[in-house]
Structure formats: C-alpha cells, structure tokens
Image (cartoon, rainbow, N blue to C red; front, side):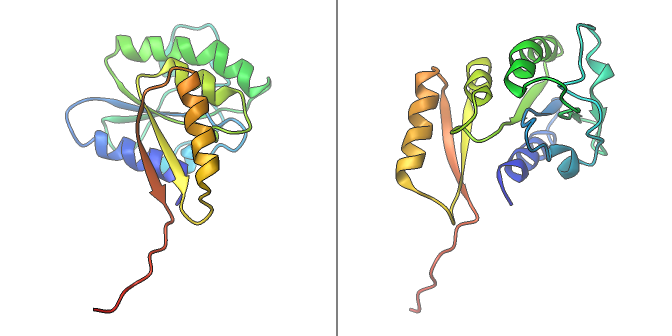
Length: 166
C-alpha cells in the first residue's frame, strides 16, 4: 500500500457521498492508479489534446460517482505534459463541480509535483513508514511550502508498531 493506494482509497471514500469525484493519475513516470481503480492506462492525461471534451480521456468505474483520468502513454516529458494539460483538465473539472484527487510522483526528485501542488487547493503528503526519514519529510514539506501549497496533512502508511504487553 503506497501513495497510489491512498489516493485511490481517498477517491473511493469521497465518491460515497453525493458529489462526483475524478481521480487523476499525474504520476506519468510510474502510473498505477488505473490498476487500483480498474481502468485502462492507454488514454488519459498525456493523450488529451486541445479538444475541450474531457470525456475523451475520462473513464468510468463501477461507482457511478467516480471517474478516472489515467496517465495515458506519454510521448513528451512528464513536466511538459503536466504543465500543458493539467491546468486545462482541472478547469474543465471545476466547471463540472467535480472533486479531484490527484496521484502525483514523489515530491523530491521530479519537477512536476511542484507544478501540480501549485494547481490544487490542498495537498496530502503520503510517507512510507518503513523508509521514513525526518529530514526527507522536512525537505518535501519545505519544497511544497515554497510552491505555496496548502498542506492538509500527512498520511503515514506501511508503518510498523511494536506491540507492548500490558
């Protein structure tokens, strides 16, 4: 269970209400959201063109309130895809009043995550509890704050806790 599982589960939970939710896989380097939500990876964010029709890349899931925009098969650098396509996709989804959950690449090491953070309302940082290093989390938070992202919280997954006997 990693960041993609957290994003998919957050989208599923939000889609139990009465508002439409769209999950977007913006991790073009290691896309996995399509597998988590049971859709095809062949069309999505990187295959969307100037066409105003979001439905050309939006895929339905078994939940009628949950749609997915997969990564698609990128033919350009991921940062270029994100900077050119994501703002227009988000604009279209805002017009539809859809809640949006975006699965992003890790904050450290790639340029496009900061671009994504600038385009959204809030960010949830997902930390792998087995490989947790406080200085790396501090770096990631600092980078996000430098992009003026509002951090809603931190999720620590894959954590192991020692059991104490009482």
